Length: 169
Image: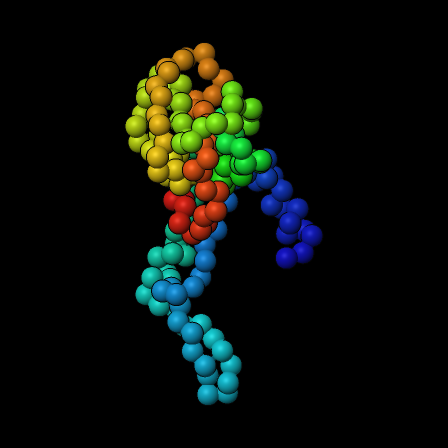
């Protein structure tokens, strides 16, 4: 790509968010390794590769929904910078995020506070799944004046490591 090609794409950057960025890994079972008679190591496409490429090049159906949702992330554990890692993970999944201090650092388990007036259990579960939190306590506090729709207070059980290919796009 040349400079002119890049400049022609610049108008799209204004509306481009992390919800539009997705990562895919072309690996088994999408391809199989094979060595040619000449000794070159190549990857042969398998049946699932075509469907994965279609998904990778199609706009995410979740993008427009998630980028309107703001999740405030607080670190309720004694591990430094966990809130930044969790916010980054949520941002990677397309959510808008902010961080702020928790009231204390003694949370054993994470807490998800739902400030929405609709109280959508599917949306709550999606946030929990994105973060990989399996023991989150859910608190419903509908507040139409809240600046964020959700607050996550990370507990000591939060594990920030994850496989990006496991995230729902």
